[in-house]
Length: 231
Image 1 (cartoon, rainbow, N blue to C red):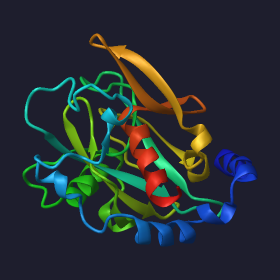
Image 2: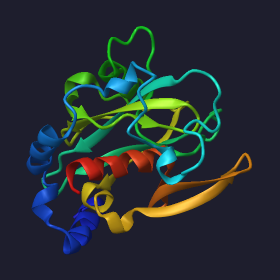
Image 3: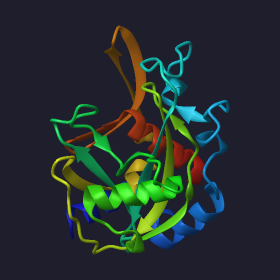
Image 4: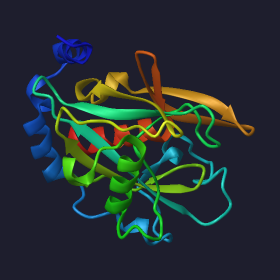
């Protein structure tokens, strides 16, 4: 049994394993996710539903960015292992100018050449880790996520069949790993942490997993996935 399978088995002691089977997840996701990108993606006058501000009452939504909103899209790739679904995450390289070394979903800025947020998420996924669009089955969208640094992120939830092949852009991605969906969808694993950033104490969700510290916007999007699908 693999390490991932061991973790799934342990997580299932405290949860219903059937809920995290690939077919069950797909059924719930297609029913409970947004069918189209959230309206606030294109209309900056519409406030986002979720974001870094959720745990930082009294602070501006964009505490660290004064310019116009920056549109971005990420892919939330759920891998359909028969023993239990997992979520694929990346760790950014240490030399990047922004969010160096942090755990992230594949994704990035929505460029002018991207017809839709989905197109941007698929393009970025192939560029960063080499999984092509034809291997990805989009299921729907999570709520628009606002970061304190001014990004308005459209998360696209999709399934990927096991056995995918990676082609990692080593300039951007230091590592790719999977976390059992059962672990991420267990609210006891949604810790709350804080750090002082540019003179402000910022609170955020954190989901430590082995040697990986999942936090910030990535953890916030995972929390939104839990609220949408399993809460």
